Length: 156
Image 1 (cartoon, one colour):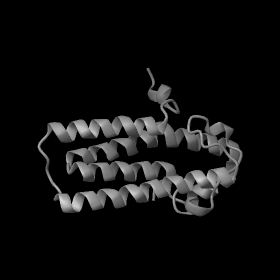
Image 2 (cartoon, helix red, strand yellow; image 1 turned 180 degrees about the horizontal axis):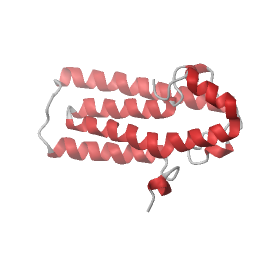
Image 3 (cartoon, helix red, strand yellow; image 1 turned 30 degrees about the vertical axis):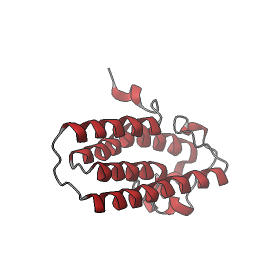
């Protein structure tokens, strides 16, 4: 059976929640390596989480302003190619923001093992969400989208 059946099926926030739960389980089950002192982990986690939320929200706001869909499961219903604002820096600010929140969670958990979560999120989202979205956007916007991909990186 092809893994393609997972493409555009699981909402990215749900993927993030599942991975966050797995990170907590790993952090509570395994001895930590690279433990952070409490005086550093909370400020680091808060700063990373706020940066992630701000990044994701700026992506949502840009989509709303362009009056295009923010539904990640239906990229083929996009009505505009958004390449301004945060989209000049990254093609995927909403996923980048979620990734930053997961890194913040790993910092809060003070577990190097928990850093496997953001890596897993990045790999899963790239394969089963971003690549299929890019296929749909290339089909919808053609050369305009291809030129955008040459100017702007997928993540950072």
